[in-house]
Image 1 (cartoon, rainbow, N blue to C red):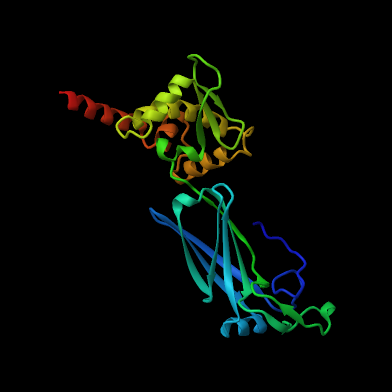
Image 2: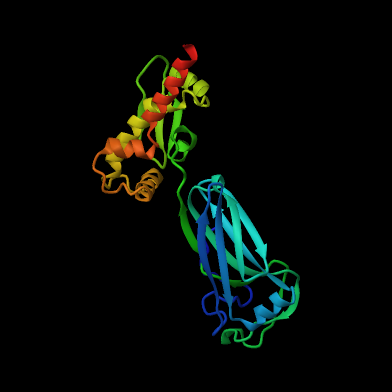
Length: 276
């Protein structure tokens, strides 16, 4: 829900020049741990009218969080000027937008914020439950998904079954927000069967994901694919790992995938030891 200035049926603090000499602003801080993402919102409201309603339980703050990539959308209600919002990290990916409002809790007659623009003259307004009284500056940030082989590779890669019959080589397409990998029908059937098996998942990462990622890194270094989401995701991950200046693409690919060859060899050794 990307917010932009609009015309409301009543003066709204923070919306263009609806209310002179009054501000409604928010500061944002984003932190994460292994399970959750936290958005801390700090609000500063200088409108005496809105503050009185907040103090008398006639209004509340709303923080609206939306991630278009995952379709996550939720409104958080609170009354304190500082709020820490907790969101499971696996529900967000790529761009996330936060917008903050002050809204009415109950209908109110005769509403008129002090210092409203002169165009409103002496008009008073009837506001309904849930009407917006103030809007803050929005905030957009990017969420960096964990890039863990097949478990989270779905954030940038999608593996599908080819439409054609018969055995054929895997094919890759880079011209969309996700890298598309097409496997022949027999290979795709085996892939679906094996991908959830921990003992063979590292080998699949080496066989399928690693060569595709190597080619993707060649394209990331150029500019022809700048607009695609998978390029942005890989670049963010490279920066987070301090790999922007690493020239060896094979080294970069292996570190992005958390050393899949090492994990595949360890898994293979466990298999052979089981037969010993």
